[in-house]
Length: 181
Image (cartoon, rainbow, N blue to C red; front, top):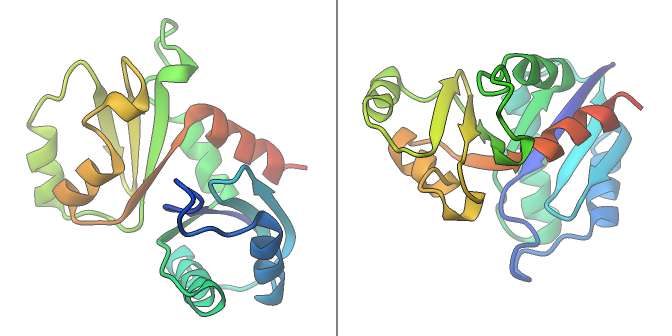
């Protein structure tokens, strides 16, 4: 049985596209998942599955069920807990002792962006904020608050032509903790 984390984009923001966490957990259970935990209202779900499917297929399954049950489309990104642990271990910004965790974020991309788009975006500087693209994920270091950076979900979606959703570093670490309970 593998542990996964589902990260939903744009739920319960500004009173729109509202999903109660109890309803979301119930939907995950109806899909055959187990050991389901939700974390905060922005729709992060830790769950177990014995379905031998790629993360993309699990995400499509969840997206389809949300559309049926709640009546709107929601981008869903799924990562295994093991993959998320590796992302935490490999964060290039944590290696610097002066880095504050409050400045760190992780943007999850729904799929691998095209190589030429990565090269194009990496050739520009967006200082003072920094980012490193690693596969389907983007490490962010924001000097100020996340809502003030140019390096938002919309930025990466438009530049890389993929769906994206971001979580702060505290949330990423908490999701791993929840998965290990």
